[in-house]
Amino acid sequence: MKVLIIQQKMIGDVLTSTILFEVLKERFPKSELHFLVNTSTVPVILHNPLIDRVIEFTREMEGDKKAFKQLRANIKAEKYDVVIDAYSKISSAWITKTSGAKYRISYKKWYTAVAYTHTVKRQSLSLSAAGLAIENRYKLLQPLLDIKQTRRQPKIYLTKKEKDDAKALLEANGVNLAKKLYMISALGSDGFKTYPISYMASLLDYLIASTQASLLFNYVPSQKADAKKLYDLCKPETQKAILLDIFGNSLRSFIALTSQCDALIGNEGGAVNMAKAIDIPTFSIFCPWIKKGAWNIYEDGQKHVSVHLYDYIDYNPHFSNKKSAKNKASVQYQKFDPSLIIPKLHEFVTGETISPQENEYSATVITFNEEHNIARCIESLLPVSKDIVILDSYSTDNTKAICEQYPVRFEQQVFEGHIQQKNAAIALAKNDRIISLDADEALSKELQASILRLKTNWECAGYLAQRFNNYCGQWIQFSGWNPDRKLRVFDRRKAQWGGINPHDTIQLEKTSKKKIIEGAILHWVHTSYEQHSLKVHKFSTIAAREYYDLGRSSNILDVMLKPSWTFFKGYILRLGILDGFNGFVICTFSSYTTFLKYLKLRQLIKNNSKISQ
Image (cartoon, rainbow, N blue to C red):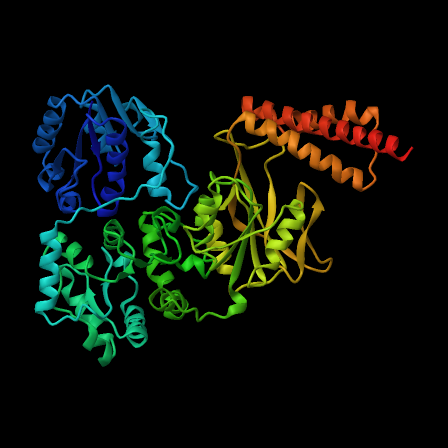
């Protein structure tokens, strides 16, 4: 199989699209994979063993119709079986259309749809720590593969000589590599993406005062004047630590120099993506008009950290590449005072927390045989909580081993009921502000931002968020599952778990206030009908026992009529019919759960009445 992947323009886009090569080579080892990219981005994919050929899109092709026509003719002559257009612009659609490939795949757009045999719709909500940029690229493989997303990260392949030359350059200039050395992404790719240099100077002054490190600046020759302005704004002590004249003469030399650093710190962009691709820690400052959830790839709150104005201030952001959004960036950037960033930066470089302890969160999760869910849950909590408590009921699968790969506290106790277990978990927490999730739940990146904003804007005892439920691969819109708001962020001094097992809920003190916040709790309910069926029997037994302990009754009408009402309510009144076949299945199982609950309760009452006689 011969495949062409098209990804023009920026470095971050090109790097992110390299994950497609990894998947394709894994599934089709004998395939021949080509990559069409802009000439300026070729250095980041050099020596990549998964790419069989790089085709350069030159400036001449961009501006000359004859050169562009020749490119299309050359691509057609290659006789590709598959063309994947990850760039998804009119020019790349034209290239794809004239390629003659049997499979021509891209994102769904009304004005380019005619060029492709298959189109996929971009998702707007990030579902994992990978971020939208990676998640949407996985979708491009759907017409070819039944693929399950795995943790793949873009990689840059440096040679030993490149690393040795970078080290020699630093040593020749008197750099003590035994000290901390940070690469500073001092300037963005343009003014719209550059944190104000007076603010950046303040951050660098703080960085040097806290670490006594040495600093390298990342900039291109055309940005030298701006780099010098930043240098001049820094304090004399900081200027002594800045090695302004040591910089990469090429993109590859910059990457090699970064490989010798302890971390890259500064403006989010290509430099950050390159540092991640060579496994160097990053601290990135996002531009206010860029959606953080798309590009904070595999952020874990420790090795990779990012800050966005929206984490601190709700300025009603409009995330867009349009000029109107960019023009607002300079005004919004002025709100992004260094004092907002310094606590996180300090923690990143020193490991010490300087923000008030009362503002910090603890996260709690209860588990039993959750090896398929727990990693996703933990990864969604890492950016917002340093104290994550996993209370396990002696799992017999790999749950414990997976948890031990993360900075969490793993505790175990015998399961005594959902309510009892969750209250025991919050009792183990170090902080009073709690984020409580089930193992099959995760915070969306938008909800992470809302929770971070609450740190300095805490007003209520509890906060609710919309929960989206995924059933056998389908996000359910109706069937009584949407809207589905859940209170998952609360002050444990004013709240605790209560209700009736297994349908536990957070119960606030009567005078306490609650509020809805932006973002979503992502809930993977069941992955198969068999799993749902097993849970129906388990939960109906628990519910029947709870009802019996509460003195509830169960007569023949309960067994006959309540299941029918449950189905009618979910399928008709709550529009489960619009969820298709899965809507019917969900409502049927809900009815069956009600039937079993009252049937088992009736049996419990009957059995215990015989014993008492």
